[in-house]
Image 1 (cartoon, one colour):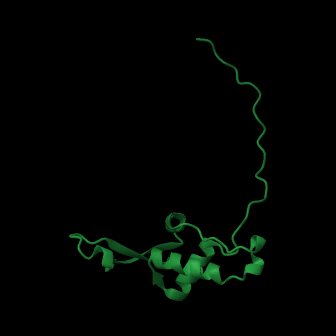
Image 2 (cartoon, rainbow, N blue to C red):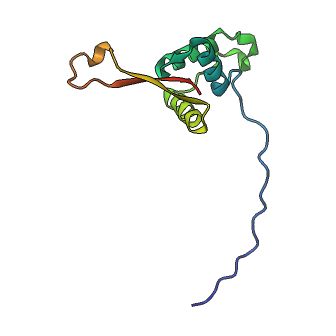
Image 3 (spheres, rainbow, N blue to C red):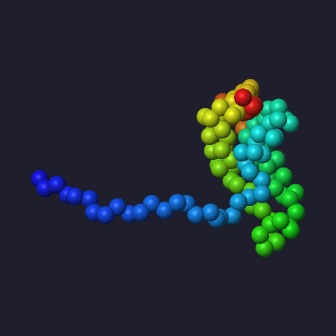
Length: 116
């Protein structure tokens, strides 16, 4: 078998600054929210994040448009990453009392988060 020699390697360029950053960091919001609330579940924190983002004046936004909040999936990914890093941890877990699951045999669990 013939050995293939590598050709010239492509140069690695540093990441360029840019992209549109939100004025309210998700990570920082979660930390500040849990400092004031004590403990909360992800869907309530996501709703609070969207409300806080909506309160920021439009003069700070790009082209006068409203800021768009991150998706719930992205928000929970950030929560999971923070939990793995040890910034937050699971608090109490209770059975969800949501009305749309009233007829279910096994109810889903609602997990709360607290600062570590």
